[in-house]
Image (cartoon, rainbow, N blue to C red; front, side):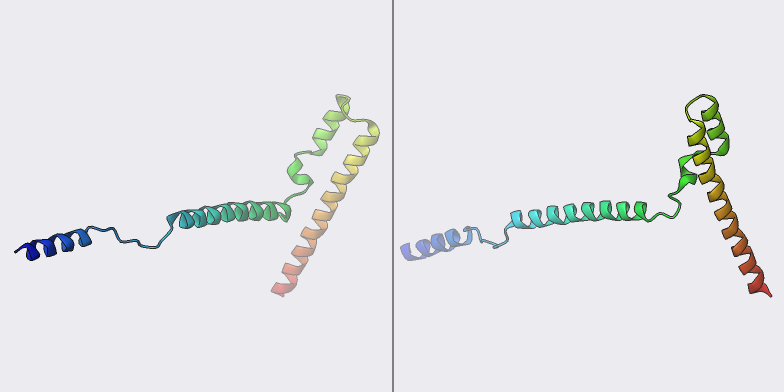
Length: 113
């Protein structure tokens, strides 16, 4: 009988020993954190590249019109030389845009003929 009870005790103690899984969770969390950092850096790079190559990034977005330039000259914020230079830029841009619009209109007419 003593043999039966000793066998039961050894079997019970063997069943309660924890089993090692072999997975180091600190490495998994470190990998997830690294991927998160890469995603954030990638999003920032995409934002900067898109901002740099945005075709609407020109004087039009600056908010200056010919009226604004005249007002600034009248207030003494611009000299006559600065006013004439900036006015030339605005007029040149307007002419370029007008020529591009005319070219687009001409191309549209040719497509429909």
